[in-house]
Length: 143
Image (cartoon, one colour):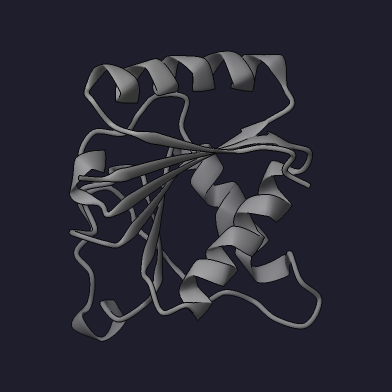
């Protein structure tokens, strides 16, 4: 069953997400960042610039875009539709709602800032997962 993990009280959601993605990819797992187009465009840039000494190779998928065979080995994918890339180990949700197809991933990560609107949306996602019988791990005090 998919493991759901919430990371609460994150002061800088972009930096935290980029560092988490770097950690996951360094461990050899593949990761999909799924969310609205604006968020994906933001993270497309952020993955290049969040660290002065490195960047995270990634692939930004457009809806319906086929992936060239040579790019399939890329560990980090950004997609509006979580199901588009096919199965990956880790899904980082950048959207306000639980993404369709989340259950095909081994792990789903929800990163929640200190913003009240973000926290309210996270509560709804928590309820969504809980109502479907998923165990939820909570990580607090994100820096």
